[in-house]
Image (tube, rainbow, N blue to C red; front, side):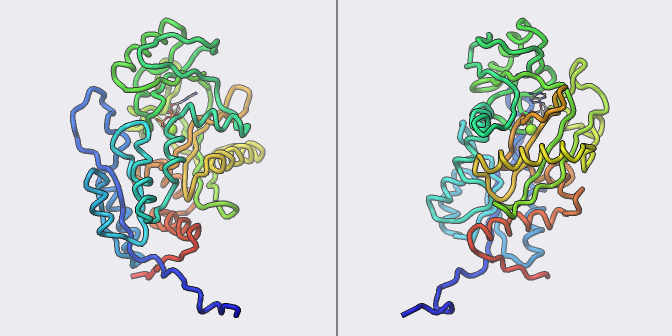
Length: 348
Ligand SMILES: Nc1ncnc2c1ncn2[C@@H]1O[C@H](COP(=O)(O)OP(=O)(O)O)[C@@H](O)[C@H]1O
Ligand SMILES: [Mg+2]
């Protein structure tokens, strides 16, 4: 007998949400930016407020060693994951892996995507096969200070598996091989793991935000990070110190002043990068424009910062009229839709 629609068990709307995060702890470390990727409690509270004001029941959980026990007990309808993980190359995959193991759905990309995206060189290799233009590069192992490939100088040096401009400090651009060796020696002392040496793209900088999935993914108009002054020699780098004091060094222009064709190119590249890496729900993609006028992919952030009034992603959404609450709820809605669920929004 044919089953009636009403007999198909429907998953109830999402009502309980656990926000999972790792907080800055203020622990002293060798590098000044050691905790750059972690969140402040204000960000966690802003996410909670956005969800609670929509009538959802929200719990906050620090994603540390105690999380497995707490989350198995809590069993929320969904987890809103902004946790960067504790340590190691695959740290951003730790929380999504745990949630997948426990069968708890979550917002954002899964462990595989987050781990690949955290490895900048691996991401570039994947995107190369998808014909996404990205600067030439070489990965340099710990302890090594020389290139084996013929890259064009200047080059920029970044820890290969870091985010939030960690390791992109006051001096990260090398004009020649000698300067490069010195930067590599210093960075190997301060940061663990491989260094990515990449041809420096001298030109305008843009970032593109995506919200949603598949055909219904919304790509926000590109935002330009306009430098008010050089930040390193004659060059510009959106580095950790610059981000800390951003009003002094940069202003933001959104939508960026680009031709229709340039906007189409950058939007299309962002979408292709998002899809090639199987990103989910939201992400931010960074680009530079070369002297040839072409766009170069720099990196993708499938777990972009959500600090209100500071992070680029909420800022570029705001420029498109999507306020903080709407954005946070949009991420949850995107996840719910992907899961074939709905969210129990009740405006309070
Ligand atoms: N190849 C490059 N050419 C020019 N600038 C670059 C390049 N790579 C990085 N940068 C500069 O350094 C900043 C941080 O690098 P990025 O790869 O986005 O790392 P993070 O994860 O720290 O944001 C960029 O926003 C950009 O200003
Ligand atoms: Mg970046």
